[in-house]
Length: 258
Image 1 (cartoon, rainbow, N blue to C red):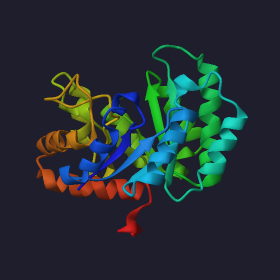
Image 2 (cartoon, rainbow, N blue to C red):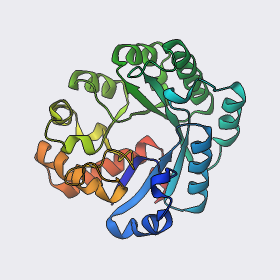
Image 3 (tube, rainbow, N blue to C red):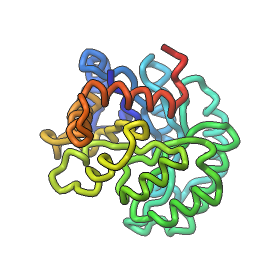
Image 4 (spheres, rainbow, N blue to C red):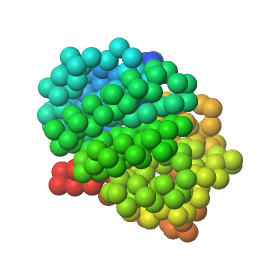
């Protein structure tokens, strides 16, 4: 059974059929998923989904692109709610220099603040990093954020960096991109990385894998990601699913719940 480590089921793309889709996932081979916050509103929505569905867990955090108006009161809300039994991580947060907004200094301020919070509450972290490879690595090393454990979400950098993160104890999130014909770097990363450091993720409703690219993504489509990883690593698909699910359970500290 598949464990989707990163989804956004609060997204409006699911407004018309959210409950029908979620109720059908187990019959489509999806055992668990984590709904991930990108700001305070979506963190609240993720927590509500987790409270009302036994197989859904929540991550609370603020994406770098949403940090312009972030306040300490927002951090206090995360702190007060991250003790809930269904909250398994702080995230997603990090750096996104693709658009240069908010300005890098604002992003870095809240990157550091959320690392500090994660350390305080002793939860793993979900890192978003886009066009900020060197700075992300530098901050995670300097703050010893690896002590929290966590995952580098939607990994887009070099295989060498992936292996460095793996050696630090992080997991690497692999999703639909690995099925794209032009995704040479992602495929090479999967080939080079130990399967014990890979977790499956959709980032749904975004990043649907082939042959569904360009459509709404959902957790049931992770079978295509597992099949591609199996092909690249010359493994059986079921073995990829088994190991990545065990990895996800370790990442989110859910091993003892079965």
